[in-house]
Image (cartoon, rainbow, N blue to C red; front, side, top):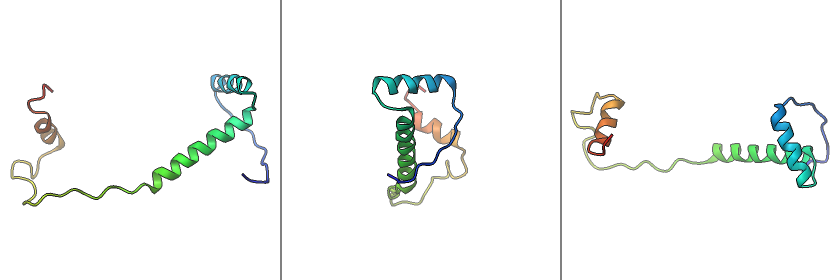
Length: 87
């Protein structure tokens, strides 16, 4: 990716280090290569999650909430949602 290599030190848990070293040996690669691959995956995931757009809101014609629910808390909504479903 980049042409410049930055040398740095990181502290990670011993068990994680051992697991990465084990995978690196099996795959005949280096700790550095796996660490870079992991960091790229995390950055890609974070970038995708911030660029995802929310779907459009689904609305129904009507007058909004009934009087029963206008000032109700979440517990009232939850109880109504699960009414008759054994919860």
